[in-house]
Length: 318
Image: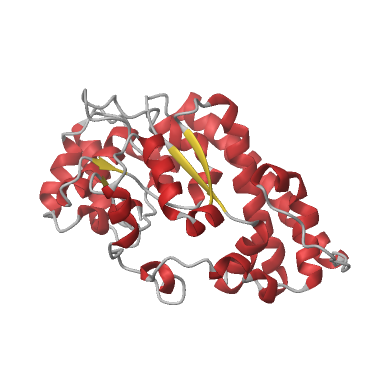
C-alpha cells in the first residue's frame, strides 16, 4: 500500500542492506572510486539480494556508475540504489520494507540518520500462527522459534525508541490497518510528511504491484480483509495460545491486545523449555554480533557510514 502512494516507491523485499553492513570491511575506504565500483558490481550483478529488482530495468553499467558517483559512505550508496528505483517509477521518495529491520533498527539509523521507521506490530498469537507453516524452523521448534522472533523484534525497537524523536518512529497495529485502512494510512502519511486525501484512497484501491512468492504472498494483491485477524484461534492449539500469552503478556496492554477469555489450558513445559533455548540462542548471537560490530566500528572500519544529508526540499527517507 505504501508503494501505491504517488510520491513514494517501495520495492519488494531486498536482502542487500545487512550483508553490505556486515561485510563493509571487505570494500575498504569508500573514498576510493574503485571500492565503490566493487560495491556497485556486487549489488547489481549478484543474484539473490534484490539488486536487479531495485535497478528497475536500468542498464547495469549505468546503475554501477551511479554508485561510483555516490558520496563515499555506505548509507549514501544504499540510498542511491533506492533512489534509482524511485526515479524509474517517477517518484521523489523511497522506502524499504523487511521484517528483519526491526531487529537491527540501530543499524538502520546508523546508515540513515534522517530515516522514519514505521513499526508494524501484529498480535503475537497471529504472528506466530502465520510464521509456523513457513518452514523457518523444524516442526517441533516452530512455535518457540516464531515466538522468539516476535519477542526479539519488539524488544529491539523498544530499546531504540528512547533515543528517537516522535517523527522518527511510529507504531502501527496490523489489526487497525486492516480494519480501518484509510484512518491508519492518513496517520502514516502525516507522520512521513506525505500527502493524504486522494493519495490515501489510491493506496487502498490501486492494484499492488510486485513479484510475490508462491506459498507466502498470495493475499498481497487481494482486497484488504479482516479475516486474518482472528485466524490464529483455529490455527493454534489452546496450549500454544497459553504459551504465547504467557511469554508476551507484558506487551499486551501497550498494544491493546487481550488474553483469550476462559482459556484453561496451560503452556506445555516442553515448549516453554524450547522457547527458553531460543531466547538463549538469540542472546548469544546478539552478544557476538555486538562484539563483532564494535571491532568493525572502532578497529577495522573507522569510516563514516551514514548517508549524507539529502538535498534541500527532498525530505527524509521514509
